[in-house]
Amino acid sequence: MTEYDYIVIGAGSAGCVVANRLTEDSETTVLLLEAGNPDTKPEIQIPSKCLSLLGSEVDWAYFSEPEPYLSDRKMFCSRGKVLGGSSSINFMMYVRGNPHNYDHWQALGNPGWSYQDVLPYFKKSQHQQRGVSEYHGVDGELSVTDIISPAVVSQRFVDACVAMGYDYNSDFNGTQQSGAGFYQLTVKDGKRHSAAAAFLLPILKRPNLTITTGALVTRLLFEGIRAVGVEYLHQGMLHQVRVNQEVILSAGAFDSPKLLLLSGIGDAEHLQAMGISVVADLPGVGQNLQDHTLATVVQQTTQDVHPAISSNGIEAGLFLHSQGNLEAAPDLQFFFGPIIFAPPGYAHPDSGFTGAVSLTCLQNIGSVSLQSLDPKDPPMLRMNYLQSQSDVQKLVEGVKLIRQLFQTSAFDEFRGEEIAPGVNIQSDDAIAAYIRDACSTVWHPVGTCKMGTDRMAVVDPELRVHGVEGLRVVDASIMPTITTGNTNAPTIMIGEKAADLIKANGTRQTLFTKYNVQNLRV
Image 1 (spheres, rainbow, N blue to C red):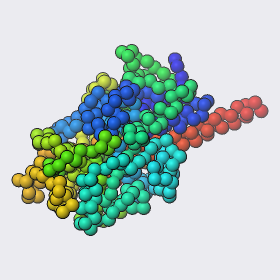
Image 2 (spheres, rainbow, N blue to C red):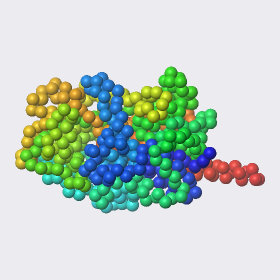
Image 3 (cartoon, one colour):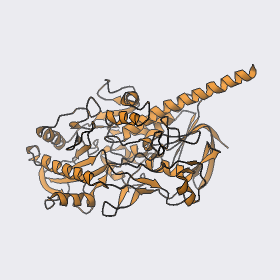
Image 4 (cartoon, rainbow, N blue to C red):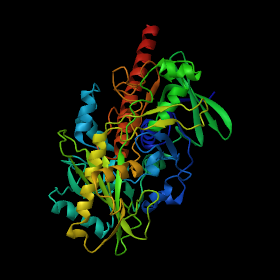
């Protein structure tokens, strides 16, 4: 049976980073397994085509179970099924979150994850177009750039926010997060710069890195409580491969817990009910699912405002605290762009713009579980969006604020008819009903293999799975709480930090072995 030092499952935002960093040592062999195909679909590289990737062959295109608080709708849950994972199909916004997010992680019992601890890893990955600073690096692989040609109407959104009294913010990843400004994107030379483009493409010739696409991992292999390899399906055949050091699970917030459960790691009662032999009783596997919910206001325009081909279509934004929010981090994030992002059933005119409000800190918690024992079946997703009425009210206030912004003089020359919610939807109750019937998600699922030391934690602060050996989870599922903003940049950071943790453990093991061998010789 073929052996590698490390097997990385999932070539997404974190997996690509881990594979890159571990193979910097020419003596370390790594197998990177990705269920999707190579990132050759032309639309992946074109920022303005990102909407067309949703639900395509490079998307797992999962759906939740009927959501009880959203009129029993099944919510579309996009996840990248391609080299680069979701970084190859997302909207490319580079948002790190709020410093208090990471300080909170540490306060929950995760030493080494404070903002001061993780900031160097954000900087390490980054090639910041604006240059080096206290918050930004220029020596990293990931290109972070300003939007090349933002639409005039996007500048008007920022102008309207400032006119209404909100701060102008030139950098959501700098000294403060609150305020209005333009998002930066993971774009290089006008093209999407996914984790695959940044961290895999430059190292494809490393002889110690093997990448296999179209490889669906079906289970982890254990001897006792130690992970010794994986089984995967490739071109219709089952393969098994062994690992000398560690298995690194980077399949994302939906598929990492699914694979743990299929492999006997999870709530013992759930596993036994499914007929799965228990390797480790970890009731937190698949729990603590968190995501950001989105409500939109869509406006037709009186003139063409189509975004440039190098734009993702969502160009400007605003972070703010809702009324009564006493937390340090903003709990509302706004998106604006010259695109039509209307809910199903609403008109899609030729030209328009969309404002959207997202809750960055929700009270609802969902879960991931197994539908069946067939690894090819999607996981069962229960999101529980808008379980809390207070969350609904925050979105109502957000929709009302977007409408106020759109009625300022900044939009006079562009403003046409409101498409959604529509002029007939005015009362708080009517807006709330619209939100429950039409809200979407920003596709930021996290938390299902959370880091910590409590009974519901799945991994420890070094991302090692509790109760077993030789297995780590390295992706957005380890977040104990969701970050304030888009989750791609934090997931890349997690990959960077994990790679150092894995290397340090490998060094310790090597020294331990060498020490014992020397003692034996004596």
